[in-house]
Image 1: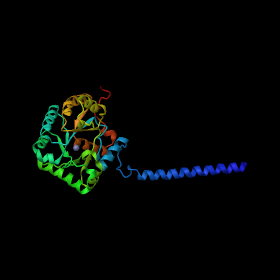
Image 2 (image 1 turned 180 degrees about the vertical axis):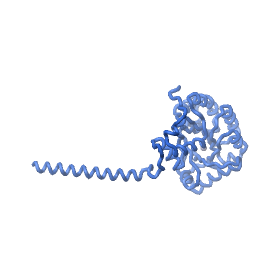
Image 3 (image 1 turned 60 degrees about the vertical axis):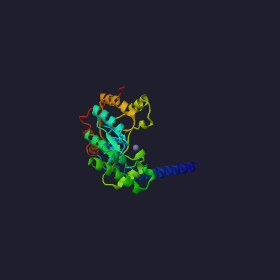
Image 4 (image 1 turned 90 degrees about the vertical axis):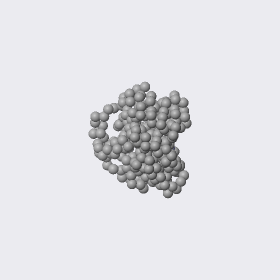
Length: 278
Ligand SMILES: [Zn+2]
């Protein structure tokens, strides 16, 4: 019996060793296959810098550098002959530079409004030509939509757009296009307060305030009066907490720098946002 128990113990030990070896091999295999494989080596590596590096490598922007007290306001679907001038006036009064993801067919209809955006220092970028749901069309149509949107911006402003926001946030097809293109970047967002549902002021205010953090990209729309109403209070309160409003281009350039520079160095001399405010 003693010998039998010893053999059993040995068998169990061998089984455990085998299991550990299999787990080890699986672990190596998993590391090789994980999306992080093949990313650029980042000086001063940290989870934050890794996440920025991932976005820069894939040219998919989901959020700005979380080490910066920066917020990017983005306005989609314009220009609109009635609402855009009011929004531009409000942004001018607040001295905020925003990013407009415009729809090409609207740009062709109201090019003067787009030129005004540029004169005011805003960034004008591409939200396709017809605002089609890109996940439901062939890749050739995706290319046409993005190129026609960029052409409309070039015709009205003389500027080359580089950033694309897919209508409805349906990113897959646009990401495939961007992967093929030389330089385009897909831009998503960190917060969608769903202003297009036209919530009342209090609801929109709550949605805007509740999840702001450094590197926020906020999705808003041009055709929503309540957004323009709530904007001044939001901007003033965020500035009081130490935040700064920047464009998507500013955020992107900063993220590219963050991948090259050590995280410790880029944090030097930065004002920190004051958290825990009301
Ligand atoms: Zn849209």
